[in-house]
Length: 316
Ligand SMILES: [Zn+2]
Image (cartoon, rainbow, N blue to C red; front, top):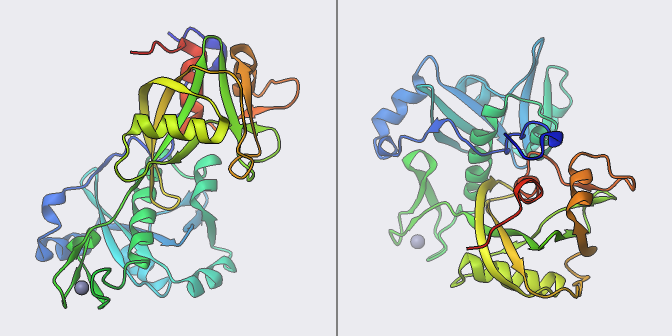
């Protein structure tokens, strides 16, 4: 049982806990992929950049279409194979920007960005991981049509999990960009920051891209020092979350703050400051007297913060 029952049941982390079986061994078999596409239970998620096409039904919004329906929505450049959900093949189909604009005008569809779909809980939570997988993969394809080695056009192969250059024979693989996201804590206090793009009153963890040649722990210490001027010691890994905006993997950590003076990098952050544990609990509950909140429950930052409020952190 939670030591803080007042916080209520733990919300589900968005885009994580995928029920998709990626069956990676089938990607190299073109005949098997064609058979999966033609399967009676094959379905596709139509995605155009940041936007997902949803069908309005009496029961709510449905993100799944047959492959024929998804292709007919217009301008499909790429079809990628996501894997099997309960044995049924799942694909993502890229919808062209011009087609997306036409679909926005239709009464039978809703065209909504994936972040809002997750924050507002507009589809069954089991759809969020394959939507994240499809969106990130299609984003990569849209920006890798030409070989980074020789400049020739590349071809989608292996169900979308590789692009090959026929000219220089280089194989290109979809990328994931690791981001360290952390909560610096010292006893009963933690440091939260505000990005310039946050809603008024919203605070969250600090975060930054991990650079080549850098360990997660070193990135946590560097970003915390750069953004807030706080020196950190030990770092505990907490959990991770796929974050398809566009192709990130958020790596959540708690960091042991060794210093106290905050120096905010105003180019990176609107603000950063110390909060005590009870104040943060009120922010998680959305009962803060000043109206402050601690991010959205589907984001890993909420879970990193809540774990500290509930249990504290024992650094190892
Ligand atoms: Zn090439």
